Length: 286
Image (tube, rainbow, N blue to C red; front, side, top):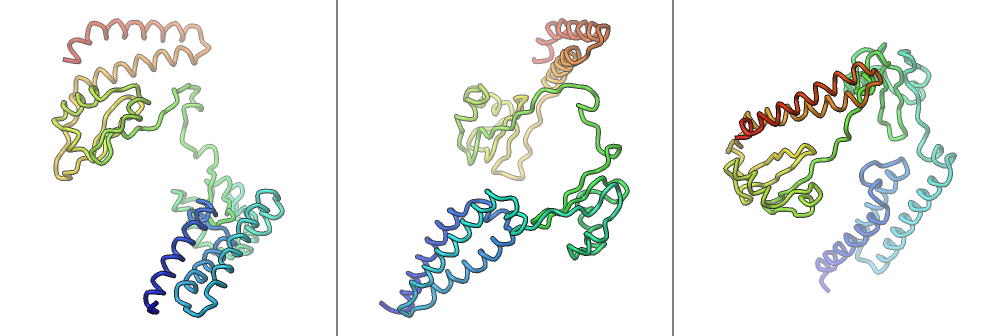
C-alpha cells in the first residue's frame, strides 16, 4: 500500500475511534471541560495524530495508549461521582470572592485573579457596583456566578403574591419547509389549523423555513426569503386575545387572594368581562 494511502486509511480509522471514544466520555467532555478532562483532551488529540501519521509497525501502540487514557478519564469521572473529596481534589473547590458587598482579597490572591478581571466578569453579569453583590463565587471551571442583594433583585410574581400559570416551551411545527406532526399533536392542533393560520399570512408551508407555536397558540414564522416581510396579525384578533388574557388574570387574582372582599370584586369583574366578550366576539373576530 502506498504511504500516502496508508496515512489516509489510518486517519479515517483514528477519526472513527476518536468519535466513539468521545461519545463514551459524554457531553460534558465537550461542553465544559474540567481540569483533568482538559489534559485528557490534549493528550487524546496528540495520540490520534500519532496513529494517523506514524507509519512504522508500532502504530497500534498509539491505539492502546488512546484506550488507556479514555479508560483513566472514565475512572476519574466515576471516582468524582462517588467521592466529594475526590471532586474537590481533582476539580478544585468553589471560592467565594465577594461576600456581603465586600471583596475577599485573600481569596482573590489564591485564585490569581486581579481586580480588573473581577470587575470585567461582574460587568458581564450586568453588575457595575460591588456594593450590590451579596455573593460572587468562582466555580471549579473558572466561571464567576453572582447573587445580588435582595433589594437589587427584580420583582417577581412571587414577591407580589401572584400565582402565575406555568409556561410551556414553544413547539416547532414546521422545519426546513416540512410539517412536524408530533409537535402539532402535543399542542392539540391539526394541519388544517396550521394551513389556515399560514393562509391568513398569505403563505404556504413551502415558503416557511421555521415555524413555532407558543403556549398561547400564537404562530411565528421565519421564511426562506429573508427580504420578505411577514404580515403581522390583525388588530382585532390581538384585541380579543388581550381581553381573554385579562379575563384569565382576573380569575387568577381571585384564586390567589385570601381577602374575601377582593376575591368577590375580581370574580364580578371577570364575569362582567366574560359577558362582554360574548357580545363582542363576533365583531372582534370578524
